[in-house]
Image 1 (tube, rainbow, N blue to C red):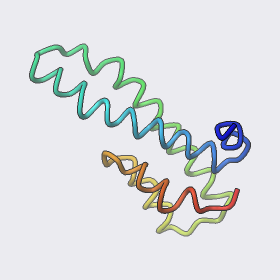
Image 2: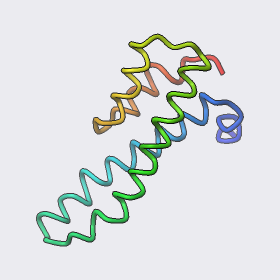
Image 3: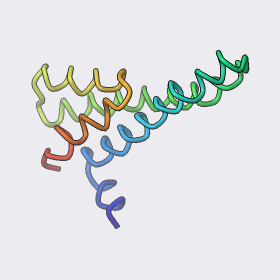
Length: 103
């Protein structure tokens, strides 16, 4: 039921995309990259890297749309965008900013 509620609003959809993007970054950095370089298996990053790339682009696009619709200031926009390049960043931003915003 909670997922259905999130899907009904732009902020909710952004929160879902942010969660998926954050998970894909963690998989890429903490699993796929070590497997690639420590175990010498370059294929480890190919699939998860592509998935992460797609989710990253979706996150950036969704963030820009929400920023325009909700008239975010430049600081908030930059903070939310920057969260996508740090492991655990999107989870932090969801807790501190996104979940508190009105739909």
